[in-house]
Length: 147
Image 1 (spheres, rainbow, N blue to C red):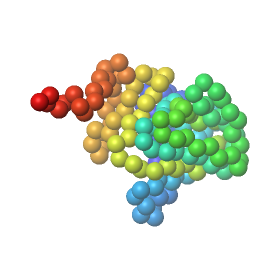
Image 2 (cartoon, rainbow, N blue to C red):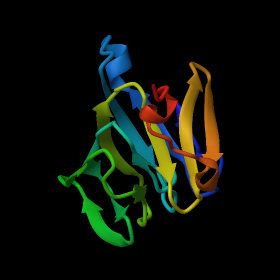
Image 3 (cartoon, rainbow, N blue to C red):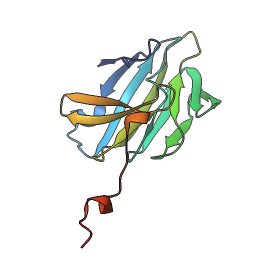
Image 4 (cartoon, rainbow, N blue to C red):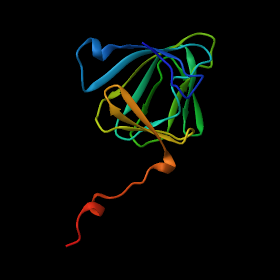
């Protein structure tokens, strides 16, 4: 599967969805390959899903909020929900290859801090992108009648 984030022209990643091939539905695991000079996606954080990567070959960087850390074969990095925003970048002249995975909890929202956007799964085939400033969060108690 060839993936490119529509709002990041540097995004290019080739993935083989290993978990789908084995019938796993609660856990997602993919073999990922990012070409030289490309980025995995867009800087983001998930609201309920955990993610991780394990580098198999190549070198690159992982951006975690405003810090960049080196990546090389054998490195493992985990990204907790509502943790720091993250992005993988291939800074070498060979492919960066890694395993990536996470759980597939429903109700996840992706936040893209550099883009000022939040993503929601609209249905099985669409993602809704909403500007941060357009989101009004109200507690459920606001909807209860005051008797």
